[in-house]
Image (tube, rainbow, N blue to C red; front, side, top):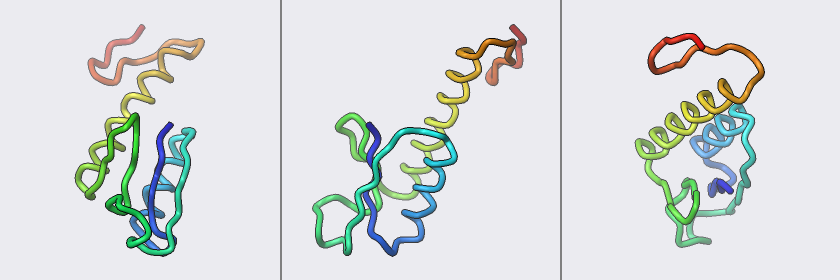
Length: 90
């Protein structure tokens, strides 16, 4: 399960949480009162034992995740779809 670790007052952490919510994705949020209460670099995302931190790496992770979810959802539906990479119709 994806875990978002962030401080309570972190605007960027709130933005990440909102993005995950908009993806309609199961995840857990761990809130900290301050960054000193954990050894993790806040904000960060933990996924399958991997820690993703830093704005660029988090953005890349979220973009990749969104792309994978879009593809998965497009082919798991009961209708025709357009492949987002090739534009080919089923």
